[in-house]
Image (cartoon, rainbow, N blue to C red; front, side, top):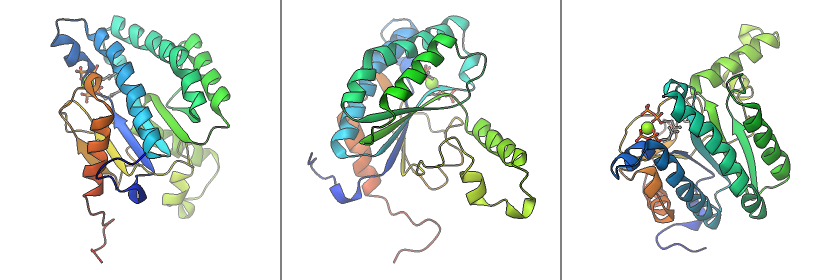
Length: 239
Ligand code: IPE
Ligand code: IPE
Ligand code: MG
């Protein structure tokens, strides 16, 4: 799809998104915080449709952080069930659009069996798709990912002289995933909150005041235009 003022030759290969502001969206309407999470589903599917139209190959979303267990037990329970529902409702559609679904994060005892089963089903169903890879970061923490990589390296018996960026990158959850070119965070918060810490070393960051349930394709397109206006130097100098 041709979108005005978006250069089709410079579409980011990987866009990652911190979907934030659901609770505030609900509270502003006198609703329970959980209503904000529910309203975020439409934002997610519309954003993915937009990303598919643009031909973005990798899209990652922060769905639940390793710190989100600190929330009230009812909200945590809602989020766990909600993620089961999201997969039930959208798995076949995403499959029909050629989306490969993957999950990044720890599968620890707190992740209910029912959800783990749904995750596996979605992964297996969509494993051969290549139009886009959707990585859902669930019970994900950037520090946890680095810790897990270091553990795997130690277990492999590596000696310290062999530890370099490539060794660490190749032990992250998805070594084939390119680093995000663009990270979008909604809701007017200017922080990373433990998202993809290793991978976003040179990502362009775009922050928007839009609350996640209000996020739509046009906001994604705005973020891509902003991204395309940036000069990426990677520590070098402009040519
Ligand atoms: C993001 O919205 C969703 C999750 C963290 C699961 P929040 O629930 O953090 O919404 P705010 O930031 O409190 O408004
Ligand atoms: C980040 O949002 C995590 C997700 C969007 C899943 P939070 O709302 O948890 O982040 P903080 O607490 O404001 O930093
Ligand atoms: Mg938040």
